[in-house]
Image (tube, rainbow, N blue to C red; front, side, top):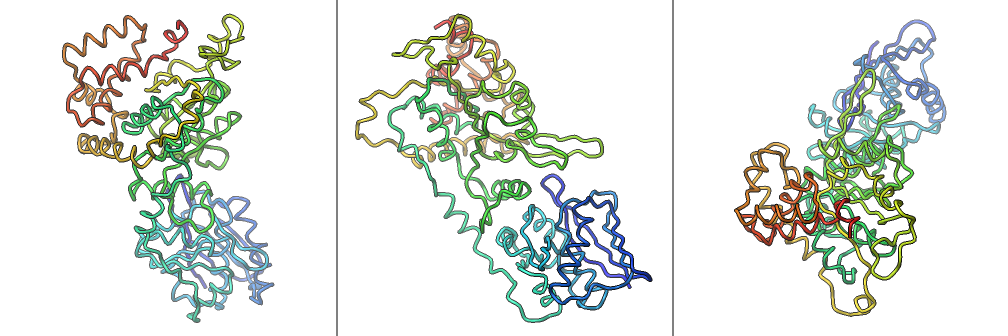
Length: 514
């Protein structure tokens, strides 16, 4: 007798449906084929113990389990439940009427409880695409799967609950779906931090507003205690709210990485990732023996904050160059290749020197001659080339700290950012892969960043007098385009250009000469 059940495995951030065929033959052997890894092979012991502890019969026959397609490697313990149900069905302990309508996902404990697993959202999305009526998942993952519309979601705590459901016994497994749109709209306005808590630093707030409006990468340089980390944490609060498509894509990545906690069904706020400077290149970029998304993919549609930038290993920083350019990362192995999204805003912070007080208005730098240059040289030119806005952060004065003048909050700033982003959305609506000014390529650059004669002369004079490098030219014009958008101006005017020029004043050759 042959019975088929259906499950799924995640490859990258997308799911592939797996057909599990269970056949009873003559003998007492157990065969598991179809390119399973060790975790899948160990399912036999977990299933036997779960059956024994729940008064279910494990057939004393030859059992052959085939996982198709056989050329895809099956990883993890999520196949315990579909294999177990297949064995119960082939031994006529479970009806087969509903098996072709539902995907089964879950790891079995020895007592028959079903453990939570990773990657439920992409699996649920794929189940809907392929026309399955519903999906049976661990109860702790049910809200994550319930994000998908028009898909019945059943959250089970034990294998006996699944058996009862498939045998048409009345159960309460079905998850009551929330109104995901209202849930999303409610959560998107919730912030733990706000720019209204920041005293002074008006120039930094302005720079962050420009960066958020154009999707520009930012580097902050200043002494310890100047507020670099505090400001960076608040950048995500002024970015435009994620669209539903962005929220789903972000949730898929976090689901695959096992970062969905509790009963959170949908990630509605833009991610803010802050990896420690001891992180490895694989931890940052992704990969491993069983490839997983790295920090840059977990920051997709959000912010990646690298504090104390020169303290990161040189190799770790250099792997950022390609993802910053392509907004995706490719993990290649001998037998397969996986693409992960990596469309993030980079915010980096660093001290100006090892002691932290180079160019400080009050404290004297104690670094030896040449040390500052060597310290800054830890950041390579090609990486710095991909950062549009350089900001020098100075300490807040005592008067600013003690004044009671209310600061502008994140919501007010975000409204202006959204207006500028809407202008860019309309401008680039027919251009693939370009959503904001920071993504402009040569064609868009030539079309939308034209200068009049006065602007050309201003930029030429600035580059000559400030010693700006050639790489600063494109960055200045992109930032100027964003400043013009914030003022709803079709043309880049001289004062837009002048403000953009000051955000390259930390170009290394010029900054060290101050």
